[in-house]
Amino acid sequence: DIDLAQAICERIPAIERVRFLNSGTEALMFAIKAARAMTGRTRLAKLEGAFHGTYDWAEVSARSSPNNWGGDYPKSNPPYRNTPPHVCEEVVVLPLDDTARSKTIIEQHGSDLACIVVDVLPCAAGMIPLNPDYLTMLQDTARRHGILLISDEVVSFRVHYHGASAARGFHPDLVTLGKVVGGGLPIGVVGGTSATMEAFAPHDSAPVPQGGTFSANPLTMAAGRAALAALTVGEIDRINELGNYLRQQAEEFASQVGVAITVQGAGSLFRFHAKQH
Image 1 (tube, rainbow, N blue to C red):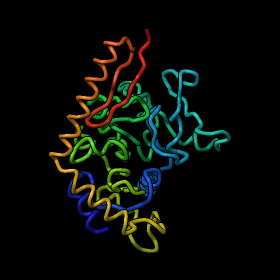
Image 2: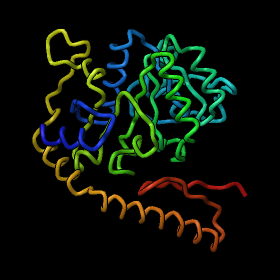
Image 3: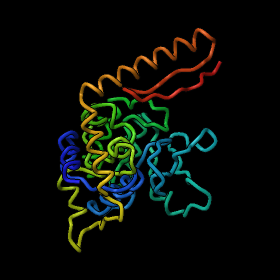
Image 4: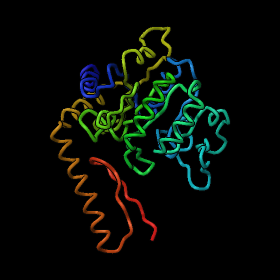
């Protein structure tokens, strides 16, 4: 686990310490717990339509649709039947990539927010890269109000050798990882600055106790280390070029055969969208 931890810390500028878990959902859950513990606040903000695993608070409004959008102020929609009301009350939902409206909402709730959860390439919300101006606004507004930023890179880490947030010039306090960093085996990682990761200090009075039977198990640690060793700068460049080629060719072929689609994504990640005729 030390080898994999060092490899992650060396690659991702925002990470100075890590804790290992068993899934991306667990990683995001503990990142939120850390933010709450270190800020003394309980509420969080997230982007409408973005998916961050199956922790109740992270799931709010992950499946929003035109039937339940809230106009200028997105609704906090429950993720499943009979969700406890207080869950939605503790989540502020931001309109995806809308800089002005999101800033207004954050300013209104700033003193109550422990964190803002962000995926710079939101996989469930179209896999359309967030606008640089939007990311800058999130950073500036969060810093002004003492809100921690969580970058969810469970899916998007692989678009750049140093991770998705580094590739976009985004500077989070906490980063969550999964999937590829486990080499195909179950894994979750929460990492961040040394100050923020003090939430998990290894003593009985830690602000956020964390552990698990299979966390940092030897098989996953070995697979993860092998995976990161294989994902060199050159290899990531190669698969990103393949992703660019696939998106271009898919759109050209669809146009030739009269299929109304567009292909979004970045690097080796992509998603198909149907167009209206």
